[in-house]
Amino acid sequence: MGTLEEQCMIDLIAVDDLLAGAAAPVGTTANLSWVVLGAVLTLLAAAGVWLIHESGQRSRVGGTALLCLSLAVLAFFTVGFALAMGGADGIYAGLGPLPGLGSEWMPRGEGWGLLGRQGFFLAGASYEAGVYALFLFQSLLVVMAVVIAVIPWLNRTPRLVPVLYTLLFAGLLYPAFANWVWGGGWLARLGQTRELGHGLVDFAGSGVVQAAGGLALLGALLALRRSPGEDVDMTAADVRALAGVALAAVGWMGCVAGSTYVMGNLPLAIAAANVLIAVISAGTVGLLYTWFVAGEPYLTVGAHACLAGLVAIAAGAPFFPAWAASVVGAVAGLLVPFGGYLLARLTGNMVTGSLVAVDGLGGIWGLLAVGLLANGRYGAGWNGIGEQSYLGVASLGITGIFPGLNLPADSGQLTAQIVGVGALFIFPVVTFLVVGGLSRLVAWWQGVRGLTMQHGRMAAEPTTEAESSDPPTSNDAGNRSALG
Image (cartoon, rainbow, N blue to C red; front, side, top):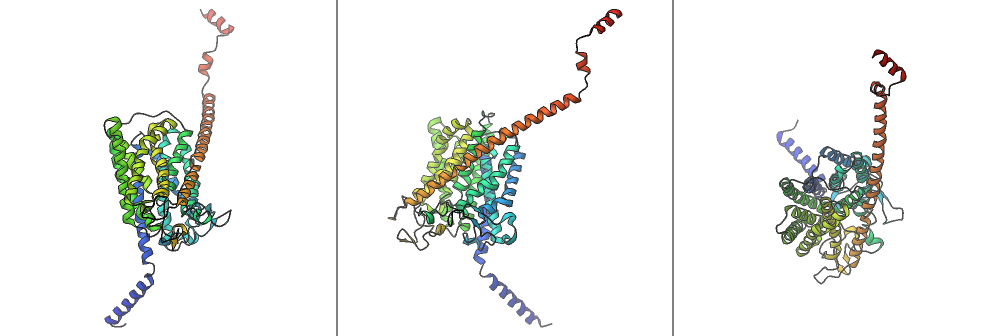
């Protein structure tokens, strides 16, 4: 055994070798940490959205809701993540290599991907920190989408219907659209295949999460059109709404923070500040509107307007200047009362109509706003477009048709955003057909089962009462007269 000094020298050399080996992925490790933190905070956003949604209706379906959320994560773990991100290797440089996620189904050739083909059960080569971080972040976005798309109508149909629909939504519908936008699918590649800007841009889920969930909710409400439920205790509703706004704002900051590192090293400070500006602008407009038309600012409308601002700004938070973020939020705030009224007439329920306005219309507006107001400062190389220069300008990023700063307008970006909005309508159509069909099927089965059980009970009952109610026979009459 050597001296103490020799042993210390050996230990220092070993530590130095270890640090030298770890020096390369230090940036990636920091990114992974941010992504995990953002995923955890995203769960707060889902809780906040749930509280705001529940502030306008009474519900006793907590157990079914938790079951649906649990099944959503399981469905995404088993098949959904692979379908969404099975071809994502090389897309998210901030997460490092993503082994086991390198196969995309492209039936029409390069650039027309529809679904991923690797990563089922996170098995095989997917056992890598970057893959697990991406799964964690995406799975909690799935939870938020299910909160929007399924929870509001749990008390309108037998429990089996939302349970089965949740499996379809989290296992196929959501993953398919997520693949098209975030997994290297055809919407993301519109810039390469059709020269439409940078392809569809959805930074933190205005379309993939919020609009998809809101439009799915619309399809379900149309399939289950019912009369509104009981009145709500507005004191309790106000408390839930305020708590929901606080949680959603904090959680959405986490989602934005995580997205800046998942999507690339985008300016977190600008994105976070724009989120705050949009939320405050939306809430202010919503409250002022109700003050003007009703004589006082309504908290529930203000809370829904704040959430609509969060939804809308998510698509392009790092790509807007501050004034544009304020415009995005203000328009989203107006969509809540106006869109909510129209959708309430369509769905037959004021509360759920407002929810569709918040998530569905807010998400659609957020996508379109990128094609209108993105200023080109950030996003160079997004979806592989314009890494060195774009539209003749060096390092030009994502640009709308009103970029300012004497930069060229990009009408192709707005066209890509419009195409993405059109693709979103797969959600209400499929949901309307599936939920309507499942509801009728379950109702029919329950009717058959009820009749079977009723016949079984009747067969098992004694026949004493039936016999005693039979009309008397001639022999009975003769016996009674003889006794008389």
